[in-house]
Image (tube, rainbow, N blue to C red; front, top):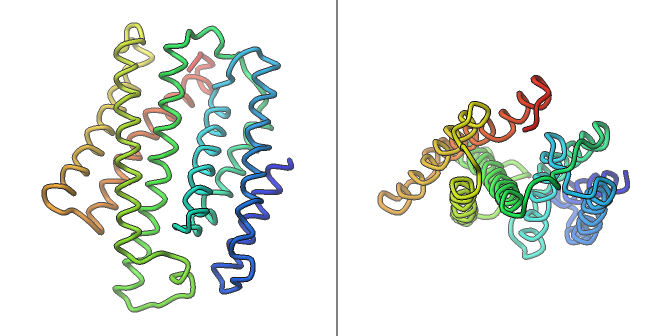
Length: 259
């Protein structure tokens, strides 16, 4: 509950800064850092209780939330795109709240270190690419406002268009490397990767990887940007959502099977 309160305070401080009250523009950083610490402590205490990592649907969602919040705090502390927190911190709050309300499931301690490595890489890739999707939405909104000559106050909270686009593609590139490592460890360490309960996750993950790879190639060879980059990013992210959380939702919450 302390983490949730701190996330909301950090969001409020960022909102005030974006609205033009620059006196507290940097005050959100230590608040967000404390929120991250308490968020992480929630998971650490659960792992101690269960004697292993807790990675059911809501736990994984919360871990992705803390990953996105950590990246947002790092970006913002370096002076790049602090406005991300206005969207990301409430998302992390909802993810943590879902985890707290749902409770704990069986720990993943039965997984050996290779499968745990695969799972952690998947969560890191998802957090990074989910943040890229949020950046893509910001890019779309900024371009749309500029084309219509609608100079809203919130535009002042965003970096220049080219800087935002550069940050988007850097995030996608890092996420693509992590997603590649996730698929590679899956091939090496997961037995029967095309088993009935894994085939949809595998196929959709590969399609998402291909889409992100095509976007990066298009950026390099043809200079893709703007609306094209936004469409490819969101489409590839939608495939990844279906692959990871879509599969876990159906298996764990509908079929009541391990995800």
